[in-house]
Length: 353
Image (cartoon, rainbow, N blue to C red; front, side, top):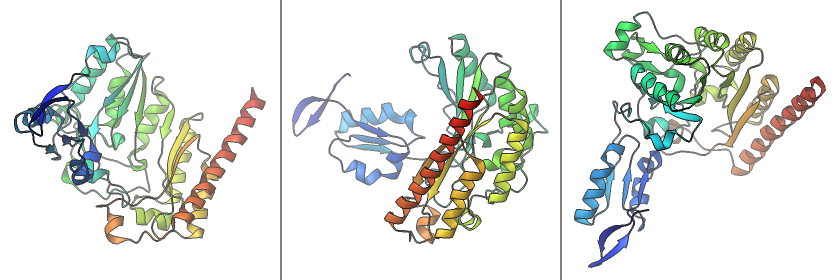
């Protein structure tokens, strides 16, 4: 890597300029700036300012930072260079940024800001270029990817009847007026992408269960090049814990969603996220999560012990009162249940083969 000349202690020394980028830079601003090796920090919405930050370091020899969040920045006009594309069969395409869900345990709304979506036309243009370069699979990215909603004038005119909807039994804490505007939704975006090339595989992550209306599930079921793999974060199998987490659904509504998905996509692969030891979780509430793992039988699961994050609703309004020892024990219970389900499923598959 090219080393830049900077002034340190009245001497010119050839050293690299070191920057820390992304949501952790925004969250840990003071700690990072106190690190001797760090020259600048840059939040997830300020990447365009990196040249200016470096220039200021060179001219002033002072550390620099820009962690300002934006309700507009989507980087829609920044396309990967040819050298980044040509050697890949699969490519990641960011379609939206931020999150409005405000789950009580989650720091994302405070480090990534409010939801804003790229114009549909810019996404289609990027994917068409990727396909021309040889890409055969795209993974659509967003903090709440299936909450995609393009409200540009072009989109409002083209999709006047595409309105917000959820699966029955799910609710949304966010009450912003823009939610009820027309404009392209995730189902419309998937439809457009699927038509670019019938051999282009389409995946997406990370979704929220509330944003799986029936028309989206039906589209995935009926469209051959949309992969039949759905990430469906559960977090907890107990209704009281789900309410404290502000997830917007009950265990019953979650199971009804799973049943509908499997009725439409019989061989779907379901993955999930699970948190153990959340604020106030009792042994009985934990058992409901283990039981839910048994009922759904996920093909993949990301399982964690709860770790408090500053700025979140849980940090302000709840007590992190489950001991670390109990959290880890409960996590192991969930892992053991998941592994036993995988073992059983693998045995069944071996017999069927």
